Image (cartoon, rainbow over all chains, first blue to last red; front, side):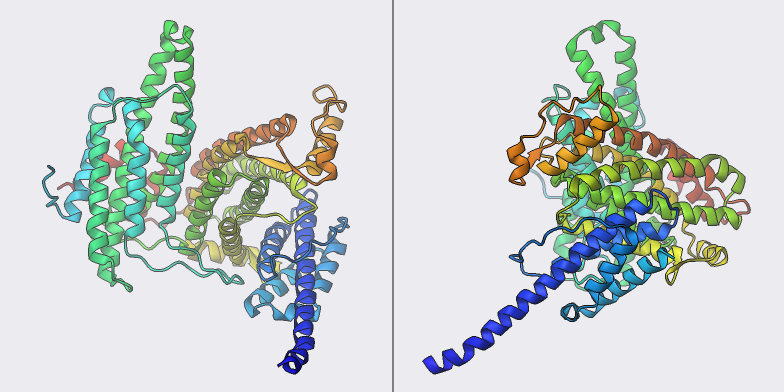
Length: 124
Length: 485
């Protein structure tokens, strides 16, 4: 029995580590989306492009939805300094393209992809 | 001992509607305090009844796994409006304890009996038939009409009582008279908004739905999305008045106005509305309203940045749904739709009525937002409060001394939540007052501008347009003979 337990432990550890890594990636994605929402909101001060309003709303909404897929105990990450709309859009794109995000449900990933395309289109 | 209820669902609802109409026969006899004491129970009974009616299930939200719970969004919203008013009046000297209006009590009893009858009969029904849905639509319209007429009666009674008080100098010299006048004015504004919200729906369906021939709804998906959003706004502001929720409400409101602005611009461009009247009246007011909501949103954003915002889940879902519905109308892929495409969508969806109805309801959101901003439970993170206080101090040095210790440094160091400092609350109140003022002008301007230049009108559409002329008496005169028993 001990032998069996010992042989399972590394697998369990690996699984826990994978979950932690995935949750950290999702939390990072949620933070970048919230920042993107705020950056889009600030951009509406000076632009009449209605797409910025849509990005501002849906980025924050999808950040909340991504967070529902993380463990409640996921450690809080340091909040990056807001760096403007273009930089924040690029950061959100990088956060979405990491492999761990593939665990999210397909409809949610599709919505995230569309949001990033819209955010990128709105800055051109 | 009470005799058993022998009336049918139809009879109970007709009696309820008739009782409501009789309130208007002699408005001078109405007792405002007695009516308002029963008002929350009446609206609650209506809400429970409408939630029990058979309906098609709620729509799923794209990209979101959760499905919204099944309710009647409009009835839920009206119930929350009545509850918010009741909560506000409960802490005041007027109306206090006293007799309740017998007619409103009868109406409440009728609605409760109707609910029980329907619940017993339809408890095990999972897939309602078309006939059942038609009956349900008729019942719903009857109930909403009764609420609408009753709200109008209360509005008349309240207005009369305010006038009496204002002309009675001696009454206003007493503190009780001043308190009563304040409460009456608050009530007048809230019930007036209630009447507008209920009236908009009644005029959409009445009286066609009563004879099982409901008119096709204009842009039903968008209309439902607006209704769900308005309900969730009420729920969040009444039950969870947090800064994150205020942030969410202000952002979605600002965005919906921006998108509505785009759609009305297109409507003006394609002649669906009078372009000249639109540019002169509605367009500047839309810009002002967008700016007012935006200004509140910017403060709420800064008060909640640098940490995850815990927005109420249902509020977030309703916001997602609403913005998604408007996005489908405004965009083509990731580009703003061309004028031609926007014109086609406006023409094919008949959505201007839905947008006007939504613009009329902004004042309701402003009122419930004011309750939230005044709520003593409202708190914020100490560091965010400090940042915003510093901004306020830099903008108005006389009003806010930077030496004044509004925030304990230990609260900032430990990242604590603190009660809303008075200067921050004051700034929020000013923003909400500006929103309220803009919303009032928005309601008027949207109605005045939304008349089509060359309307392909049928008689039915003419009745819908009468929603711009408010007042239950107008409705009664026009349609009462057609639905008389």
